[in-house]
Amino acid sequence: MKYLYIFIALLLLNACSFENHKSAKIGEVAAEISAKNLLGNKINLNDDKNNLKVLVFFQNGCSSCLKELPYLDDFIQNYPNKISVYAINSANDMQTIQSLAKKFDFKNVKILKDDLKITHDRYAVFATPTTIIIKNGIIKDRILGETPWENLKSKLISLL
Image (cartoon, rainbow, N blue to C red):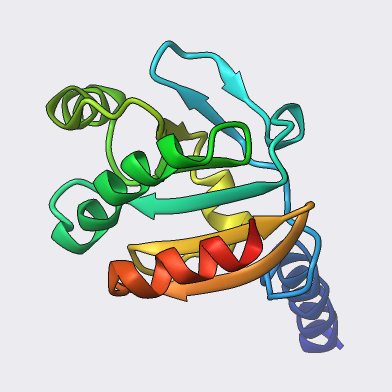
């Protein structure tokens, strides 16, 4: 009988843990992020009025992660008030993220520090870079790993 209770308890705990993990699949409503900018201010996607949003999950030491961000920074200049890009770091401390931001000096990409990997978990990110494209609150694409800039650019233009 004791083993039956243990089995039931483990089953219930396991069911609860799966309930909290979202898959962030294409076609689903995009989850709100839980992140702060470099000044420590909380950032919400719902406060951003642009219809097209790109989330790039990156980390220091990942050269593929940092390749697309300069292209995106330039791309945004051509489409003011239409697209927002959020570079979200879940792996590094704020000081490291601030150093990266200073090094690259992005004008348009918003660099964010994920709060306790909450956004990372909400979007089921298991590798970097992971790029999530959101249009009107719906996930339109999910790109795992490095992608050629021309491919990403054409996807974004098609959604503008």
